[in-house]
Amino acid sequence: MKRPAPLPDLTAPSRRKRALSEEERALWESVAKQVKPLRKKPTVAKAHATAHDPGTPHIAAKPGPIKPVPIKPAAPVKAAPAPRPQMPPLAPIGRRDRAKLSRGKQEIDARLDLHGMTQIRAHRVLFTFLQRAHSDGLTFVLVITGKGKVAGPESERGVLRRQVPEWLSLPEFRSLVVGFEQAHIGHGGEGALYVRVRRVRR
Image (cartoon, helix red, strand yellow):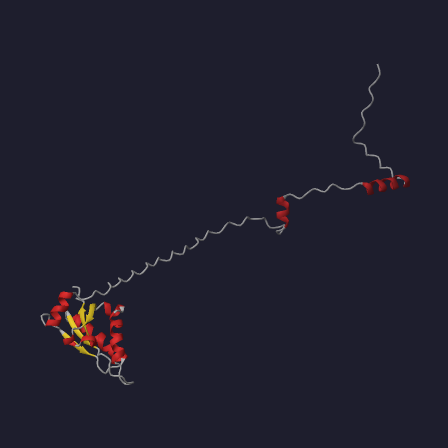
């Protein structure tokens, strides 16, 4: 029987490495130049960590409290103003009432003579007169304008004869007047008007 080969002595000192020859060194350098190192992509955690001080551990910032967004109150809707009630059209004085006035059976409650007044003054005086008649509860009044036969720059009687019926048709006068008609000849004829005053609503 053959004897087994003796085990190597591990405790023995290792042999010295052999030095590379010039050819081997040149070959190694040429190989080393052709080898490219593998580049690993940095992970998200590492890339995030490099932004901070490497010696300080990164602490995630706590989200702040959510501030409530103030809600502006809706603008109140303004109600449209109620339309003003329209005044009824003027109504002519009936035949029966006109006959009573002309015969004196219906009393004329008040008279207004606009002779010699300018248009501005006559308009103001007429409106004030009808306001007072309305508040006093009068029914029929007589407004004398004049026939306007006398011509002259200082006279406006002819103008008032045309203007007064137009004024009585205006809204501010219609709130005071129901209607009007030319007076009987005994009360002035073409130069005067019977005016029926509107009653006060209570």
